[in-house]
Length: 245
Picture (cartoon, rainbow, N blue to C red):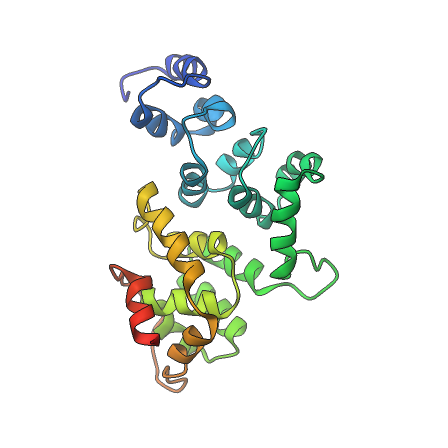
């Protein structure tokens, strides 16, 4: 594909966009290309599942999210993630489906975590999302410290470990899709495979918020630490369950 012209890639993406028999690996590869090429696949391909699309948003950001929002039938997890991005273009595309049972469930889920409190103070999720995607670890660390009402040093210790970061996101009541986005931004490359993403979402939802909060109680607010340098932990949610038990 590196030798193919942009026009050829666009033609291929359009040709494959409604195919049920195309090689799935090829479709996933092309879906990760710039939106000018991949849009037909993002909007129509039946071979891109909900987990694939969530992964693309986490890796590639708002441009891909806007194209994905044009899909006629986003699943409940995907709809929840799209709505949580608070983008006007995405909202204008998702809103017409708000009366369906599928999005009613997604909307109720968002309401339960406070994302529809438009007149309230900015929610921790919005600050965490914006700072995580800013590329500045110090800003993300500050946002987490504010959200948890902990010191900057404690937030640095938490963000240095994937296990503790996941515990913090669960303690804050973030949805699995939101936690996925933050983990993928702070620990890049850890959740690139759909199988691992699916497992992460299932494991995260199984975590007990009170147990996660107990794990965080051991963090020392007074210990000096530089802005966190993330260290990935294999089997993070499983390790957290063991520590919290």
